[in-house]
Length: 157
Image 1 (cartoon, rainbow, N blue to C red):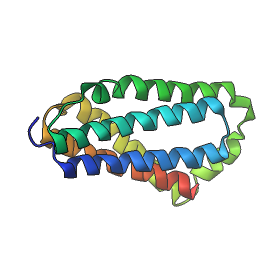
Image 2: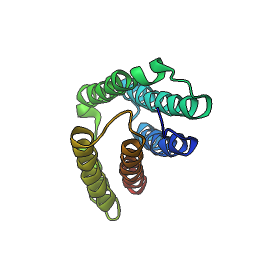
Image 3: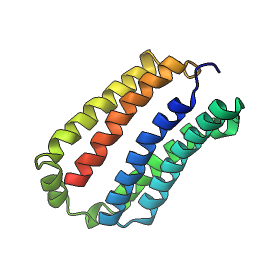
């Protein structure tokens, strides 16, 4: 796969770091084993994808399983996090959550996160080509902005 460089792999690590940090912040406020398990699984999926790009760019070797399990691991992680919200719905003080996320600047970063998530979904459906380096670069910058916005929204909440 041409164009999968070390710099692309390193940029791919940025949203994974932001997402992992966001999940730590949430887990500190919302102590739930299914949530933490899902957050770890989703973060591991991102780490596997970064490792795949690192190996691809430095060793010119395609370790397919590192890429193959990204979507199933990420989806399983998100499902576990969603299940944790359903299981612990009554334990959550939703008015505190709403007050926190609607405060400035948190709300501005949440809005940016929602917009960038929509952009990412659109890009993945309409423009993304998995084995094209240019397509991966664009997806990574969109994801960097998206995950940075989520991190800042949670941090300031």
